[in-house]
Image (tube, helix red, strand yellow):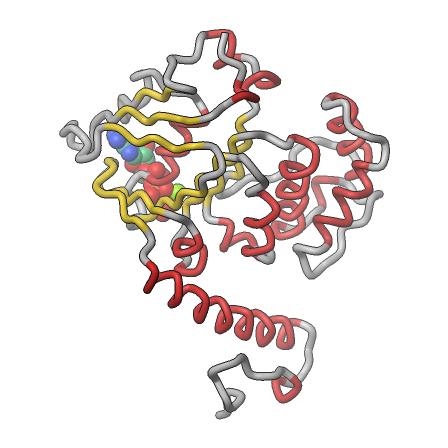
Length: 268
Ligand SMILES: Nc1ncnc2c1ncn2[C@@H]1O[C@H](COP(=O)(O)OP(=O)(O)OP(=O)(O)O)[C@@H](O)[C@H]1O
Ligand SMILES: [Mg+2]
């Protein structure tokens, strides 16, 4: 039986778009260590594509795609056993529903994964580096804000689940430090798919799948020029984040230093 921990590649075998026409790209291989973007207009099927991977679809979803692991069709046991499957998905609107404290949840999860006893505390510290409002160990999971919940999920996926396949849906809308979160989630040898409308995240990937009308329309390799644009955009983005943070914390914008290449702070 395929053991997903030894995963070296995922293959997406094309299905059909919303009009039941065959997808333009009929086979996509993603190797371990790759970060692949998924871009496309709203409603074009980005979330559906990562759900197909999470479910290890075998022509049994609306898109009729099939997912292979290491070139093979995963067997029924692997599809159904969430402990063996080890595909982590950070969805667009995920919230914690469990009625327990943050630390109790993390202890339970860490124990079930055989992790060291300091792992839950490390997970909270890591989550708190991604969000402006610190999470306290004794808080109930259900009272966490949207940003705190997502930060905790990112840290939990990175440190406790440590899954070889990570699927991320629009992390830029989570109200957390998106680039730091992506770095944390894309450890060595992992396969990472990131759905995004954000140019910095999209250009950080090596290639991006473009969805249209429910189907995979194109795959674009990131060019050297795009990488350079990404480096500059990233600096502007950091500047924007600092401005946002200053406004959030009730500070005046005069104290925020402009980013390189922008020699004047923004003024009215
Ligand atoms: N290949 C397909 N065949 C049939 N229905 C599809 C297909 N792909 C997507 N859909 C349907 O289209 C709708 C929109 O898809 P989806 O939510 O994946 O879009 P999205 O790109 O993630 O949009 P958003 O940017 O708003 O998050 C869903 O109801 C989904 O079930
Ligand atoms: Mg979506």
